[in-house]
Amino acid sequence: MKRTGFLYDQRFLLHDTGAHHPERAERLQAIVRGLTEAGLMSELVMITARHADMRWLQTVHSEGYIRRFEEVCLAGHRMLDCQDNQMCPDTWDAAQLAAGGTIEAARMIMAGEIDNAFCAVRPPGHHAERERAMGFCYFNNVAVAAKYLQAEWGVERIGIIDFDVHHGNGTQHMFESDPTVFYYSIHQHPSFCFPGTGREFEQGLGDGNGFTKNSPVLPGQGDETYRQLIEKDMLPLLSAFEPQFLIVSAGFDAHRDDEMADMRLTNRGFEWIIRCIVQLAETHASGKLLSVLEGGYSLERLPELAADHVRILLEG
Amino acid sequence: MFVSQSMTRKVITVAKDTPILEARALMRQHHIRHLPVVAADDHLVGIITDRDIRSVLPYKLAGGESDGQTEPDIARMTVSEVMTTTPVTISPTHTLPDALLLIQRSRVGAFPVVDEHGKLKGIISVRDLLRAFINVLGIGEPGTLLCILVENKVGQLKRIVDLITEEGISLGSVLVARYWEKDKRAVFPYLLTNNVINVKKRLREMGYTLLDPMEWYLDQLPK
Image 1: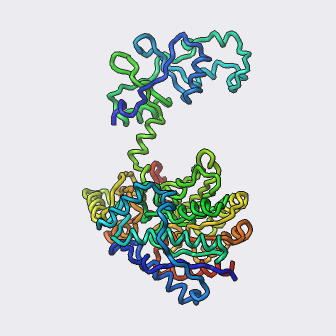
Image 2: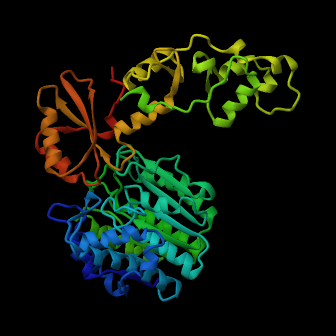
Image 3: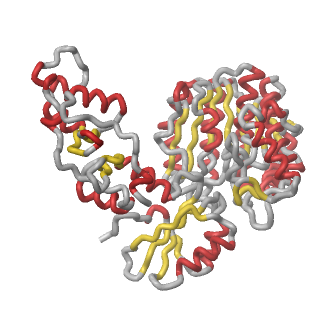
């Protein structure tokens, strides 16, 4: 049995995106309900969210962007950069807590206080770019945690695995020249899905060439295609990379009941994927695994998907 | 929309008496495959391509490695001996659709852009046209493409655009393509959003069919 951390904070719910937005507070409430009903809450180590230190946010975002986000948000404007990014005055606080909480989870893993963690955060992060909010994302939680691990703990090789149905453009761009961070993403093919990046030929730049890998999946595909691609691309490449720490951008929107895209993964498919990732972490990273929520919009499926996810982290 | 806006203005050119090996070196240095040949005053007299040069080089030279053993004949050959003297040209005032159709018809990779006095003003290549086309499609911006099947009658696009506007979504582009069913059109709005759940739901409620992405055709019609 692993010591699995769980990051959640009521203040994540205050990030109000309006009446009809799919990235809504009920998502996190569904996840907490799922873990509670599955009897998993008492098994988890609670992680306290804290505000991210500005110096960590600045490792991946420009100071100008951070200031602009703060000003626009606190001035009461309802969106940042694009109609997708609906917000309220509490969004600034929630976004700092999401990034800071993810850093805290990374710290606890490195300090040996826990083995792995699941961070149920809002707003999500993997679309957030250096200078721009995008696709419901403001701060790139996963990228900030990776920079923290590099700088504060001297982690030399970090693997990031992104199975959200959308490509994590922000994360890819932040590390595409960095050969010490391997970014792997499996997502719906960008010609049929937001954000239009993550094509097979995007494989990293300069020194980072060969340290980015994208597996686009055509619409309508499910467990079997994911299994084939993960066995062909993710497992051999990440095994060869030998990451000392694994970070997961955990999006549950490739599920067949999720209306955001056109993939057909089942609960079993998600289980298989996370087991593969846990196994990779065991083999190369002494089990060090930090899973951070991205998308996933089916309020019916999120409780069970989150419970399965956390159960596998606990089993290790 | 005009060739003059999308063409490359700083053209690398050669003269008729430039040795072909020099022309080849220029192409390699600048990663290009077409060199307009000009006389005095930038007057266009021909074009030379990497293929023209390869066709006259012996096999071992065409491969690339210059081993210093260039045969004297080839070293003496000049551009005028291999260039095309009547290249297909286009005017800077022609449009990008003109250029697209011309490139499809003439099967060349680039056109010298020449004014009414025969003076070289630039060059426009398939690459320049692709860049313009990518811009038109809006696919450099993050967004989501939908495909909506509509009856081929007046007012359909308005209803769709009104709905997209009501949802507060910006449009990157809209393509309307023929569909293989008679009296149907396939409308492809490129929406600059990640959030398509509501707009998809409302389109279905309005009676439109959203085509399965695996059934999308842009340039081929079944049967």
